[in-house]
Image (cartoon, rainbow, N blue to C red; front, top):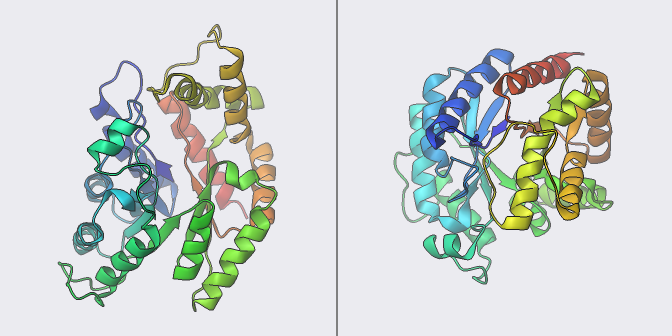
Length: 317
């Protein structure tokens, strides 16, 4: 499960972080294997800007579930600092920490400037990833402290060339968004697997998408609407807002309506039978090893119930 600490209209940002911790506790009770958090900077609708801090809070309130980042945006950080942060997390919560890394920059020019990273800066992701791994495995000329007693698993959040980077590095890859609907997704994943095997590693593919389960397709669609509305607002106003309750009379422009329908079309939603069929098709097309559910909606009780229904569905032989 990936939780982005989505803010909700009428609530302070701190509430979103408390909801994340409580959701992680519930996910552990339901038997989920991992719980990841995200990195977004200066986004009104997302409270999580520091994955290592939030990972520590989640791991401290849980006992068994693996906790990690989905992910740390490597262009924003010095690789040594990331290695130190995750070495410390692993020392505090042995054998429970995952490090997912991505290459996205800040959403807007002011955010990129605040992060000291321009949009046209050279792409150093592959070399930064190699440097990060050298600190984690102890082969770098500088030793990251505390020294790791076990490897921290590294995952690459990838689209496009990121698949090649992950394959050449022999690392697990996480794929999400519209790339999963690409007609070339099968060949791209095959290329990743070939590169990973050539690097002497076992390929591992995680697919990430929103999954919402309710009593009917209409009820599940309603759960998908708040996130879709937020995306439509971001595309038309440049601001990704807090989640809002469903308003059947909400006025949308033709462009916003198109964005909303497209966003809902990229979710897996419905009752158990419909969701099971869609997930089976996705796994047939990708040969994925794992599902990362990145779901959010305004109604916390409905989200909690959807998480529980998905857990039961996945546990069914």
